[in-house]
Length: 384
Image 1 (spheres, rainbow, N blue to C red):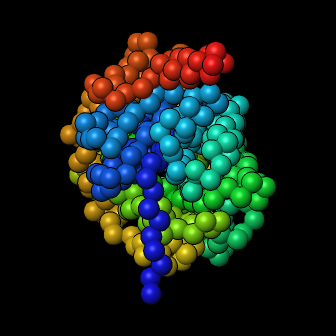
Image 2: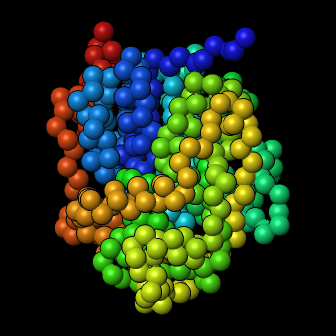
């Protein structure tokens, strides 16, 4: 007899204006109309409110602009919306940036996770699931002949981004042990597809090739990555949400492992540029340290009933078509398309003061409004 699936009532999904978060957010909002889903996102440089415009009028969806490091705000949201499930996607994720701005990664990834855990702890038994989204990079450098990393392997991060995610994992595990927090941790391979900010390899190369510009390959381009189409990832999180076991760790991975230079070759084929290949390949200095591969075992996720459905060739074509049909989606990408982009807060996405337009909805709650509501509630409580 199959075990009964978990039935959430009110989900707080952080980072829902980002890439994986928004695809998962839209998937869940549309599939489960009876589940209230609250998106909390501070709208940093790689976020885009257009990523969730398809659900903005759904009655089971609410957007809140705010930072997960704001303890008052996070506490207010969890109590106000009677959150019983946290799906924590919000994070600084670009490895290149972490070499030069590592403190921002600690702030968002470690302190932000800690704030969420504290707020969840304060809610007591109200919280029935806390799903923490981590990365395969916490396993560290994988060799060419090494075995697949399993969820029981030790963590050995080699860059500041991976270290911040490993630190956040240890914080999550400590709350599970000390406070019986019902946690689940996921570690995922590289993800590609629609809505990804073009600082990452595949959308960056698509954007450059579309403008007949050369693509930068780190080092000699032989580093391997496993690629998973984002809709498969959204379905993996759906599966983990409904069938995942409290206390478990799940690898979300792909069998499509390719050298970075082979990915570029595939894109050159899609663009019909193979005859001029040398014109579009530019080798640049490597990262301070560049893990060779992340080779992970996904058997525990497969046992839950998940399977990878989208092949790499199919997914790559769909991704290319999506970006080419939305040339103005991100605005000015001059910073992101550099070989080693930076996220200087003074640099705008749009070329002017950093400002993103939020789709109109009566259900929006902004940070200042939410905190003001919380303070008013505290004052009323003291006066009674």
